[in-house]
Image (cartoon, rainbow, N blue to C red; front, side, top):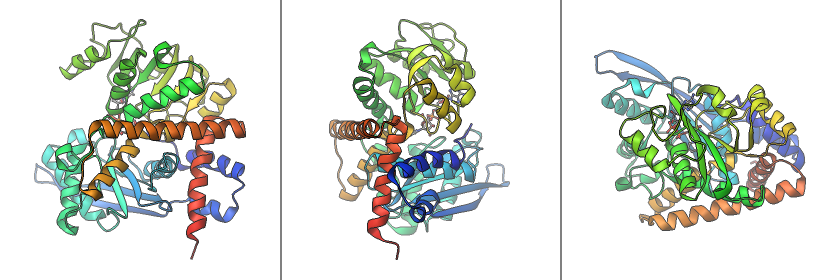
Length: 414
Ligand code: NAD
């Protein structure tokens, strides 16, 4: 499943614009993408054949700074999907108050079907095709679904070949190659800080007294589970694409992680019992449901069936517009994606700053600065939610849209 159509994100943006009384001229500027680029990548495969893959980059808005957003490698990374995620990134960078705009890229490919050599060639072709729109002060990619630090290292290397040494052109690089401490764990760690503030200020409880169900056990869900577990939270169920596991008393996450690292599956894990996987997994009774896998999983039908008390959106766009409407009617509070998974873009910003300074911060400094960013943003959102008597999602968009609209106005339109 991919993210919703651009209209889904824009419906939240429009709601914020109404509250902010933003006029139609500015509305058109911020609702539409600045630039869309599609490139055909002709990649010589190991077999000797040449295969063609479509790549897209959408630059949505850069009024607050260079465009910023991941490159995902996925068969369904269509232009619409990428556009919707680029749009989301404009609001994410604004709500997290990092000096970037929003972009997203995608290559329509199943990376698991390619050899390492083919993947490297594909990535180098991608940079060759897009190098004129990328750059440390223009548009800065990052890892996303189907891409990792190895792919980002190739992006850095290929771009530097054409434009000179440029570590700041891409974030999410390996630590020994101008990467940042804490980047791989950033989104999951950010989910912990977000959960802590949300539970305290909005639900009047804490992580220790809360049960969590997490869909997705990858870079985001896996780390979020580990940090929430370390903080005393009870993770009662986790799922990935192959299955799920459940333990009412709470899963031993370090043990489960070790089991997975040894090639095990969630279903085989001895410290948990079998549980329905697939969409039904989301309907497990719990305090907090954390979708951390796919977009669009909480549609109106699913929202009716959920048995959680609150939702923290660690995935991008897990809730559709219709799903959100049902959750509002049912009074289930939602900590929205543009804030809840913003830890990744905050540490990406830290990596960019370190690259520009040719300096490296230690892990502790990165975590401390991330905590401050997440905590400050939560309280700003929460205050707007109280002032305007709106859900946290609308408040987050109000904060983000105001920042982007102010930047547009102050820069002028000449
Ligand atoms: P990932 O590929 O590392 O992990 C995805 C996980 O979801 C895997 O465990 C996979 O098995 C699982 N999954 C896939 N299909 C599933 C299904 N049908 N049911 C249950 N689980 C399923 O990806 P990730 O980086 O963890 O990203 C997850 C989500 O978070 C995406 O929406 C991504 O856009 C978003 N996100 C990621 C980051 C980041 O820093 N990685 C930052 C912000 C947002």
